[in-house]
Every structure is written in structure tokens, then in C-alpha cells.
Length: 131
Image 1 (tube, rainbow, N blue to C red):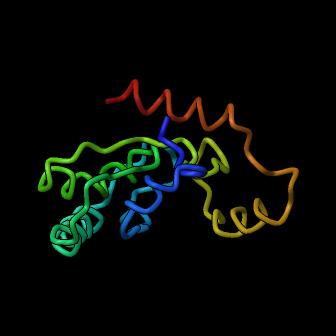
Image 2: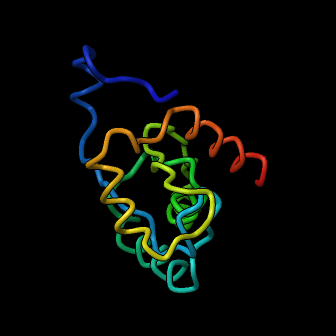
């Protein structure tokens, strides 16, 4: 689990800058969706852009597309990617859907559609087993 900074003023003062990045283009929404060819190129450009920013930690969603988006930067900097379940996306459906954007919008507006933590843990476990 990632360390918490709340209540630790010394650690909080040493944070510096935070770069928040959405994953690169992926082949789908499932936890094990790979990057597209364009997504791989985007991840290389992302590494080009961020490699001189003094980054000392890389924290990622456990989903494959997020980890693969951070991989070129991780390799260039020699910094391990740390998974944090709190960054995992909500799983809308186990199979692809053509209207996923509409369903995603509904998932945020309808509390009954929100995914449980157990679903996120199951997705992470599947991802770890596929590595």
C-alpha cells in the first residue's frame, strides 16, 4: 500500500510536483487491455516529455494499459512502477460495449451502478496473474 502523507508535514513538504497522466490509447476498457500501436507511440512521447522532470516515483493503476503507459518512463529512469488500487478504473462490464461512453456517464450519475472494491481487487488479481 502506498504511504499516506496526511499528518506527515515533513513528507508532504518534500513532494515537489505531481504529474497526473491518463493512460495512453488502449485496445479496450478491460483491466488487461493492451495499448494500441498509437498508444505505444504515445507512451514513448510521454517518456520523452517527462524524463527530465526529476521524477523519483511512478504510481499507477494496476490496469495493464496504465502500467504500459508508464513503462518507457520507468525503464528510462530506472524507477519501479508502484501499483495503487485507488487509481483503478471502475469496471463497467466484462465484455466490450459499443456505447461504453454513455454507460460510463451513467455509472457516475447513478450510485447503484458504482463498482464495488471487490470488483477492483478481482481485476487486479487477474492482471497480476497475466504478467
